[in-house]
Image (cartoon, rainbow, N blue to C red):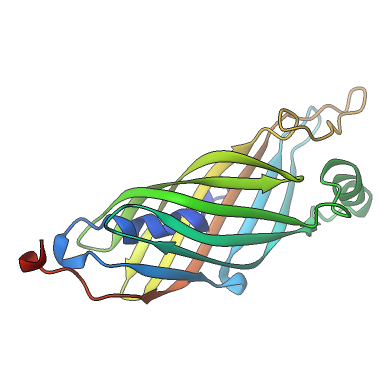
Length: 204
């Protein structure tokens, strides 16, 4: 899988649970994300080069109600885990931009899901919620693609964070300018715990 779709979309995966294509598959559930199978990558374009790095998922789960499309749960990323393989650059990112001593976590709180689930388990979805970064919450909508087979789910997504607009420091120095937004890509796998049986046609 290319970098362009391997990161912060684990949260979108539950949309497949909220709006399956067939009524026979309609059911509520909770997606439990596996940190060991979750890759969160960031990419920051610059005048001389593009910086690539990763963050670590601490833990996360997402609940979805197929009747209303409402979602809940919590995704927590360790802001202190940012790693671009250059210590001096990482220290500046953590101390001056993210200020991890004050804001050690990046969180996402899902609120609403919409999407479609195919008969083969392939899905496309949108997840709306609040991304809390550097102490401030921001409404975002992410798109996700993946596959749901039984109670196992894999998903990937991409979105961008306008970190300067959101009040964080611009790390540009003279000719060493960088973009004012950072691209985030997520790839993840998780386990679904179903909370009720699929709805049958007679139930509608």
